Image 1 (cartoon, rainbow, N blue to C red):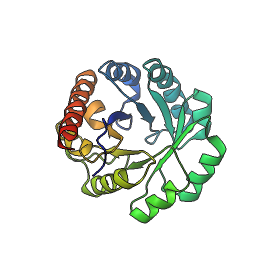
Image 2 (cartoon, rainbow, N blue to C red; image 1 turned 60 degrees about the vertical axis):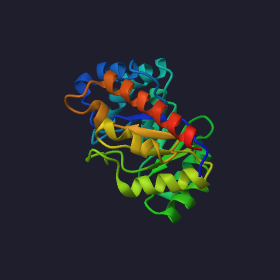
Image 3 (cartoon, one colour; image 1 turned 120 degrees about the vertical axis):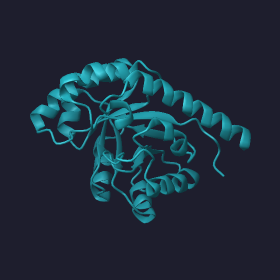
Image 4 (cartoon, rainbow, N blue to C red; image 1 turned 180 degrees about the horizontal axis):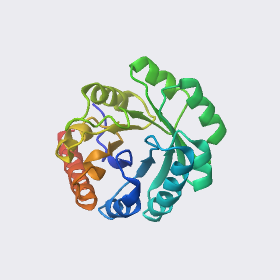
Length: 218
């Protein structure tokens, strides 16, 4: 059994519309503790993504969170981001990024869907691995395969992991109960009709409650 930890929240910008991105990001960050934000190009071309990141990075950093750019080292550098995330599941590319950018940048990756792939990626010593797809929260609950990988990983590997949660914050306890150091939310916070500040506040209450429950059970 893993030693209980208090999972922290990570936000993923995938569904965030450019028109109101900065306002909704600031609202989310005002709701409570956020460890980091993954800034996803989500189909934007390079110039549009550059502008998008340059608007979000200062707001994220001002709130004390790490701004991590997905799949574009040039945008990460030009925007002054804190990190780079590689989503392609390429172990060699992840290793090259670790060698090139650490410790100046946080370096993490996703797209590793088996235990073997995850362990090989972990041997490259990224700052974290992410289980699930950045756009993988298309159901209210977290994906079962991602849950299983995160629970296995959290118990045996020192490299931290981020687990992609579901689209409904009400299921966050399921993700946090795996022992993952970080749990990511995307549609739950930035989807249509969501109140970003209220969801982040609720998420932090849930993470507190899960940690208390696991601590008492250990």
